[in-house]
Every structure is written in structure tokens, then in C-alpha cells.
Length: 90
Image (cartoon, rainbow, N blue to C red; front, side, top):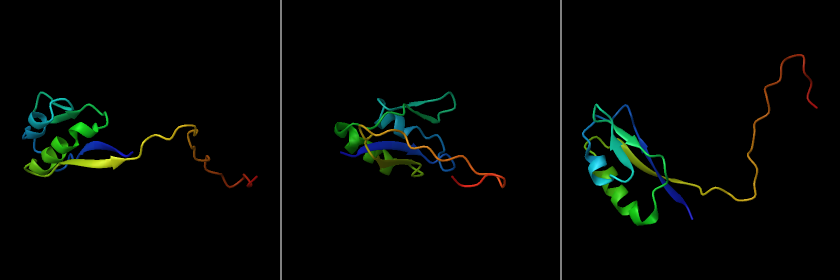
């Protein structure tokens, strides 16, 4: 099952605060009125309210995006360090 995650477009946000009113479990406001996300995935029971909050944002700065669920039994993928000119591929 895919999870949903909230994101904010900081260049668009104008601190209206409507998102925090609609999703108080996930969004609080800082001292200037800008949203602070709790970072947790949006549970299925809250997705409808989260979509409404995103669509009702006056500047459409709040977004709900799908995120893949963490895969079990798989290790973390790591990129190889960049090679220098003196190193040869293994």
C-alpha cells in the first residue's frame, strides 16, 4: 500500500494558516504563521482531509504526494564514491 506524505512549496507559501486549521494533527504553525509538518505519513483515514487542505490552500503551496512504503528485508542502497583520475575500476 502506498503512503501519502505532505509537502510544502516554500516559495509559494504565504502563511495563511488554513492548512493547520484543517489538519491540526499533522500541521502546526510557527511564530510567524508558517506551517510546520510533523513529517509522519498521512494515514488513510486522514487522506480526504489532507486533499481538501491541499486544494483549499489559497496559493496551492500544500501538496499531498504518494510515497512508497518501506520495503522489508532490503538493505539501504549506497552510491559508490566517485573515482579519482588515479583510480582504476575494480
